[in-house]
Length: 344
Image 1 (cartoon, helix red, strand yellow):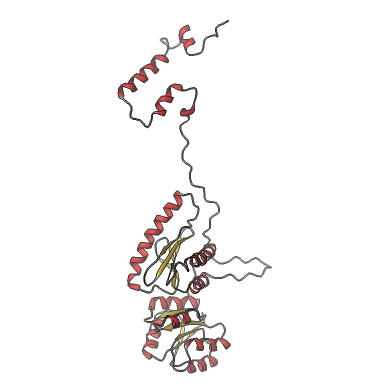
Image 2 (tube, rainbow, N blue to C red; image 1 turned 90 degrees about the vertical axis):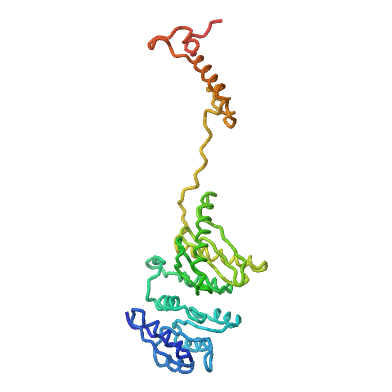
């Protein structure tokens, strides 16, 4: 695989060096260049090919967003990761809606940053199955899983969207959890909810669980729901559960969930229906067994042992076995309904 060229742009050298050192841990042939300003980045990228631009939002001179737009005029295929340490929610919203492929809040979570670099440079495989290509037909461009997750995050102005498997392990993400210290506890609790919801859905006869959960919290609301048979999705953001917002949240979330289920191939069409309860005992309505009726009708009441013994004694007297194994008396045959009918 040819070398991928990464341009790091940050006026804080310690940040650039930290990201550079982190990138050096990846086992790939990477050409990593550091520059302190947007103007130098524009000059460098105009003279040299660039595969990934990693830029701080606030730079001396132009901003990281302006830099991204200028670079993309003559490097339209460049991938962009923006980083910001700004606490202003308006700036964070501007960064999230800028069109960057990913963005991170300082301090940058290194593991997630490296994962994003690998995915956007195509250095790692994807969990998605390859799309079949029909010979002679032009394949329609379909949104990828990261595209759908980023789009959902932007539509809901959310902080993070996570795709989890049925073990609670993150399979894909659009950004990361705002508080890494609570990640393990949160995902563990959500896994318990997921398992309980799947059990209830099966009892209700659903082929694919369609339930979802909304948590109205502070400072963030949570939306959580199963996706297909083996995954679930978590969205975290402000105002998702507000009365005027919750219907939009449900609508956008549901649309994204269906598309992701299709991509993952988790909409089964041949699952057996939920088992029906066993039919009632046929003896209850059998006219040929009238003596069982009273016991079956009174099966929910407690029987006196003496009454039970009396019932079986009468039944035994009514259906006595023949005294001779090979012979029946006339009275016994008549009693069993085997004798000739009386002539009138």
